[in-house]
Amino acid sequence: MPEVTIERAVEWYDTDAAGHQHHSVILRWAEAAEAELCRRHGVAWLFGRTPRVRHEVDYRSRLWFGELCKIRFWVESFGRTSLTFAFEVHGEHGLAATGSVVVVHAEPDQESASPWPPEVVAALGGES
Image (cartoon, rainbow, N blue to C red; front, side):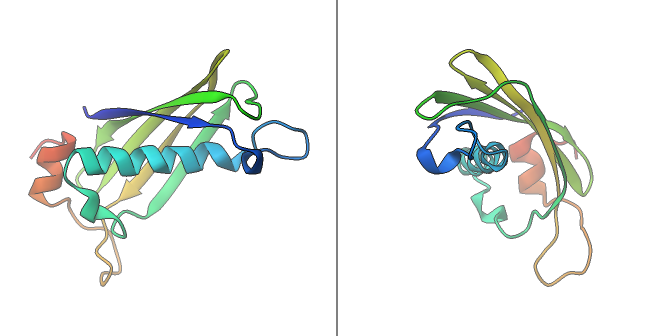
């Protein structure tokens, strides 16, 4: 299934009072990787049509100001109306976080999730 790896440095504004990364930066980086994955696979137009219904992060180690990190992000599973992305964040000293994000396909004018369009199925590896 499709995947992408991006790099980010821990900036001053990414840290909390303890001096290491704030917990929210991991999900922000995951969303940046998701956007890159969608751009690379021609489905960037999905922005605004994929609300999050679940996310989970396991924090393994701290990241410090200035540290260069790699975020690996991929499609883990693909359903009729939802898909699960998974990610890993690696800092200079190894694995710092793992997690997943579940999104559903929902058109802006619709009240509930709907099946993925065929072009999304083809681009992101789902089965028809």
